[in-house]
Image 1 (tube, one colour):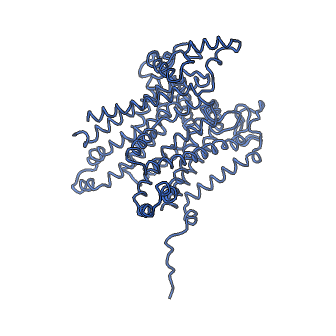
Image 2 (spheres, rainbow over the protein chains, first blue to last red; image 1 turned 90 degrees about the vertical axis):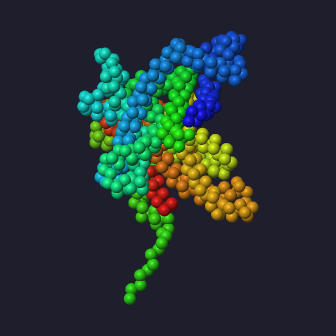
Length: 316
Length: 283
């Protein structure tokens, strides 16, 4: 078991190396020449060459890569090109906000996805199931941007239930309850795609599990419906739930970035979109690297959880 | 004495297609929408980009503007007719490229040695769940936001799906007798792959690709809405949603909602067509 986890950790090293290379490549392949862009054309060739040396741009690519990597680790990626302040001060707080919204989205994804999947699975073929499947089909083909707008309209304009956007009430105390209230609508909107994927998988797992021989045996022995559903089917669909939730992490992150703009959530998605508009490569690279590494870590956690849930591995 | 004609056991694929209501509906919707997009210059009542400060935010059914106007006074119906062009072309082209790449990778994985195929599929598994938005953002930073970003992102997102399907099916095909027969006749491995195995996978790939186009039309619309995709002044369904966002909550929901419905309809039609094709080609 421990060896398995260690092996997974070792496997991450080449992966993280490749990701860092690709992110480094963004500024290398970008159309903007950082020097020409920042400085006027009146400078002489020698002056430009001096500045190139000062920034290490005359070095070979591998040396630039090492410098860049060291910058990422030590000060979060250097100085922003557009705001002239350290990248870490821009990217880290935004990343924390995105993480909060992402975690809330995962919670909504699992709770609603499992609920929809479980209910429609045990009522397979009935009206509830067909209604749920229609919802799944339409929901997974809706543009998430429009879905977010409709959620705002429903919860904040038509009925004054929830705040229309942002992370805290400006007049409020900025407490946890206030944050929760601001989280509900964007987390629900961002979970649209991932929630429906989970619902579909759970439904299939419940249907398969309910038709298996051992459930039939329990039934014939007179076990109550509730006991069978809760104890046996519930236990059997736990690994697929963890697995599918892990598979939807990518969709969750994508959903969060889409939703941040709509709900004016002060997260990394908005920061990155602004940085792209301003060709602010240090911010872009630092932000993308952070999200990619987060994705890899969440993936690792899912794999380890699955290992723990697998009795064949647990007892070895 | 009446002679009962023996039932035909297998109808032709075309006959089965026509009998499949889902597939037929999907096809009809797509033909209509592609037709409208192609004929937009002749169908549109107004120039889709011509603003009119006198007629801003006309309601649905206003004189001369059947679906109203947006906040710049542009005719929503005309923009709607033009707005699918970019999305349809981008999604179809990108999925077609992804299908070719994914098929080659999947075939190679299924017929490669244990080690190579293990590494390949491990990478594909990881990419399967990768947040594609990061690819879109990176591409937008390298080349400017535009259709190229959409095509690259869709290819990156769709290749793992196609590879998995082809890999799984090619592994089953590999064990079948006809492959063994070809091998014993002296055919080389690449020849077996391309002339024997590939034709048996085409229908699965086509079915899967059809559904992928639908999903990706929805996805690219959201990317365009964020400003990473198709750029103004070109009318585009995705951008219409974000441009209509401001006025959606202030009483003009149509500007953003009509393009959303158009996207939903196209995506559903591709799904129906894909599901229908599965019933027809892989009964």
